[in-house]
Length: 86
Image (cartoon, rainbow, N blue to C red; front, side, top):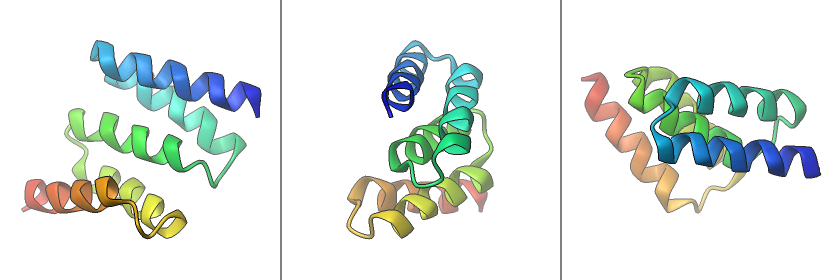
């Protein structure tokens, strides 16, 4: 659990620094360890959006919504991804 929190914090740092690939990779590790890691899916989705992979990003945000149907930020990101895909 502590390792997971560390990975998510490192991913957040990568996002803030604009290091999209590193953020995605760190989130991949967190998701591998815990398939219900809501923050990992959300942060990976953010990184994927910046990498112009809107379809995969949308899937991550939809997974966040499966885990937490009331997550407004994820709902907004799904809409943004759908607009970008069009």
